[in-house]
Figure (cartoon, rainbow, N blue to C red):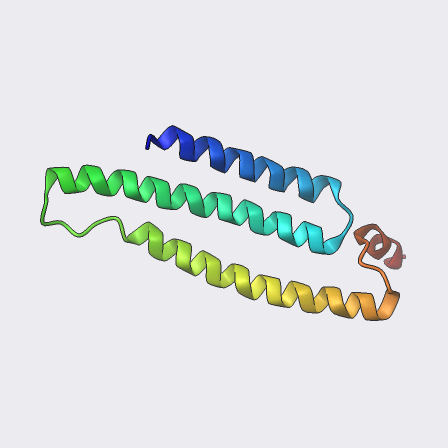
Length: 111
């Protein structure tokens, strides 16, 4: 499959994520949109890794390449999982205190 399809899909996913972050007020939806953006970047990393691995294997069949970006994706997923756990803990505490997960309500609490 050509790399263009992966790029179009990643751009569409990233755009949906950005639109969700900018337009939604619910904190859980915002976290889901951030995860969608991270997955779009991960898709591009794996696609480009596969593309460059095929060209490197064509030049040198005994080379071991194409694993670096996939390891980087693994670390991104681990950091994203940690971010979600901390974010959901903050959201739960926010809901316990103010009985809302509206992000705009948090701006009113500053003053």
